[in-house]
Image (cartoon, rainbow, N blue to C red; front, side, top):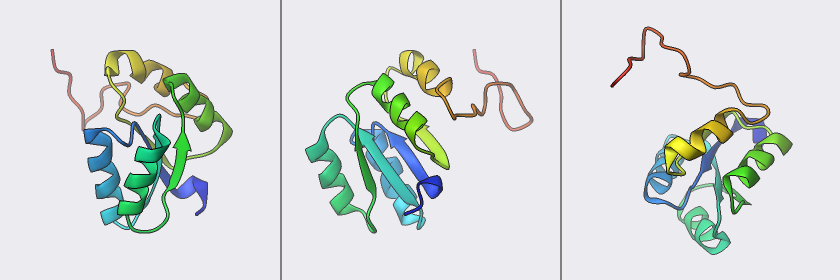
Length: 110
């Protein structure tokens, strides 16, 4: 698979990450699964259609480094706590942060 067409899912083996991976695959898109546990990543990949790429990274910083080495069409961060993990992911190299300023399709809460 062309890496630029992949949708990278950070924290792919968590509850939300698995749901996102299943939905991405169901839509005929190719997920790249990132997480800490290689065995769990492989189990998830085997349950999905196609051949999702597996990227083992044990910290958010390692995930950001993987993003810097490669290219993704989209990066979905499902690694919590989000207040701590979103900034390093959003500001990592090669990423353009969406939703950082209000637009017609977003609204502020709180």
